[in-house]
Image (cartoon, rainbow, N blue to C red; front, top):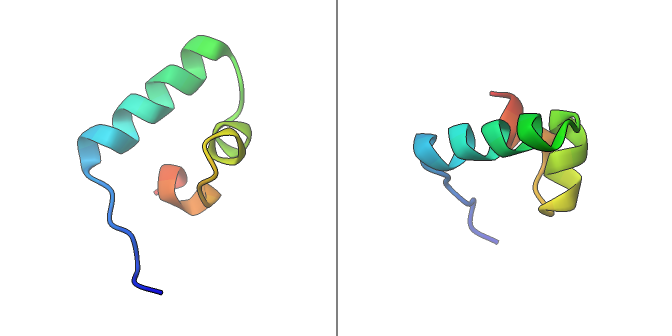
Amino acid sequence: MPRLLFRREFKLGSVKLARERRVSVAQAARDWDLHEKVLRN
């Protein structure tokens, strides 16, 4: 399976949305079916 690449804008937007929803980055990653490291880094 090829590795997925996510643009910086997507990551920043996802973290911003997680903060607005007041959930952890880990929870946001699970909600969007992503690995936590995608958003953490």
